[in-house]
Amino acid sequence: MIRRIVSALALVWLFGFVWFALFLPQPLGDWRTDGIVVFTGGPKRIDRALDLLADGQAQRLLISGVDRDVRPSELVAEYGRPVALFDCCVVLGHEAVDTRSNGEEVAGWVQRRGYRSLRLVTTDWHMRRARFEVERALPSDIIVVADAVPSRPSFRTLWVEYHKLLLRRLGSLFGI
Image (tube, rainbow, N blue to C red; front, side, top):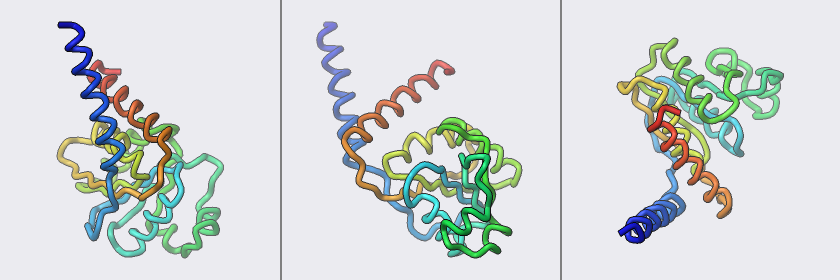
């Protein structure tokens, strides 16, 4: 009996990983939201979010997890965007240090602004855990849409991220 239970759990775990690795979230098309949030830490994430903001897909952009020493002028120079775009519409979030605290930082920003909808931008392999943390921190009536930045993750990246997601979901069940 125990062997069957362990075997069933192993199959669920294995098929879960296969699903996780083969069906990564995709970029979102034309979908206007009140705000855009991007997590730092991966290539092309901030570029994607700035493009969406410049295209009028939202009113404002929060870049969550920015180092305290980074200034808007540095991002203007690095990403080649107009100063006016940063002055009017980009907020640098300096509070987050990991994906969970990204979710908390996003929730505070969304609630202060009274937003009802949010576009989350992060790398495809990171999207499921990022969205889990954001939705966990926000009230259930806030709409969160996922806009994944395509990548070519290694097996190791997928393996580690899948287990981080499993552990985080398990931990949340126990209030951790």
